[in-house]
Image (cartoon, rainbow, N blue to C red):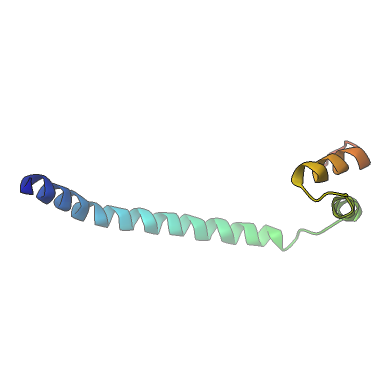
Length: 82
């Protein structure tokens, strides 16, 4: 039994450096992705049809996701802009 415990501890101890490296890589990619999205998000805005969509969502009788979606489909035309 001690051999199994020692092997497990050795394996986990050796894995720690690899885990830190993976965590640093993920953090780096997250930061790069966030900075990229922020540069585009500053230029986004609402347009007239966006305000109408939000108003119809707000004015639906029941605020459950299904009812809000049903209200959007019922009120608005079915054109979706990219």
